[in-house]
Amino acid sequence: MARLAGRRALFAVPVVLVVTFGVFAIAAASPFDPVKAYAGTAALGADQETLDRLRENLGVDQSFVVRWWHWLTDALTGDLGHSSVLRQPVTQVIGERLVWSALLCAVAFAVAVTVGTLLGVLAARRPGSMPDRAITSLAYTLEAAPVFWIALLAVWLFALQWDVLPAGGLTDTASEQVTAGQVAGHIVLPAGVLAVSQLPWFTLYVRQGVGDALAEDPVRGARARGLRERTVLLQHALRSGLLPVLTLIGSRVPELITGALLVESVFSWPGIAAATVEAATAVDFPLLAALTVLATAAVLAGNLLADLLYGLFDPRVKLNEM
Image 1 (tube, rainbow, N blue to C red):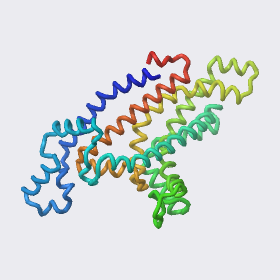
Image 2 (image 1 turned 180 degrees about the horizontal axis):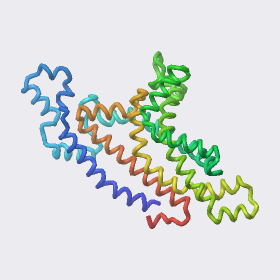
Image 3 (image 1 turned 90 degrees about the vertical axis):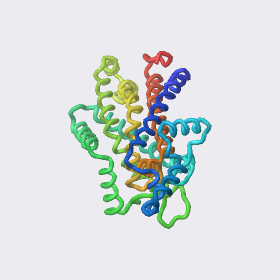
Image 4 (image 1 turned 45 degrees about the horizontal axis):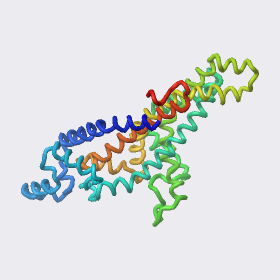
């Protein structure tokens, strides 16, 4: 396991270098002007000399290759630079927002895996039955629905029509401090919407995997020995049928991150979504590079987790050979 993690860490180094270089190159080709974004409305009345001086102070008068190299060498010492649009150190911007994004993604992912597994097993028990058709139809419908549309529908239904859940934010409007109870109440809608967006994939994969496992000879042999249906399902079919789902965990991380950005924007969740949008529109090179590295690390970690889980649950797979 340690050797696999070490190899993946070495593989991550060139990936991060290429990704961050690409971010600086794309940002340099962007039509957005970081100087005007930093100055705001004051840039409209400023002369060219003032704008050139500000461009020099921000360090955007150099080529993107030089800026990328300076950012990279500083990042190796723990200095991720200063965000020009948020007027804060990049480490502070990420530190204040990452915990809330991680909480949202973790809760949504846990709910999606749990509910998706239950629905998939229920559908796979009797293929072609009414529950199977209903669950499959619901999964395909949710798969086709954009996550922002689900989010807006949830706000309209639960916050505006029924008034049972808050429409957004982290705490109540009049609250002066963050409490666990308020966070728990405010995370229900965004985490639920994000979980619903990931639910179809897990449901359909579990249904297919468990359905195939129930038709295999070892499972049919267990039934022939007189084992109870619940024992056959949970101890034989489910374990074998969940193996393909483990590979899905890593592949869903990019879409989970993208969905989280949209959900955070709709529900005003204080995660990294707002920082990402502002960094992109203002061509904030240090913040853009740091957020890209963070997303890349999350994808690589998801793939590593999927491989580790597959090796632990499938005796045919040896981690030292992966």
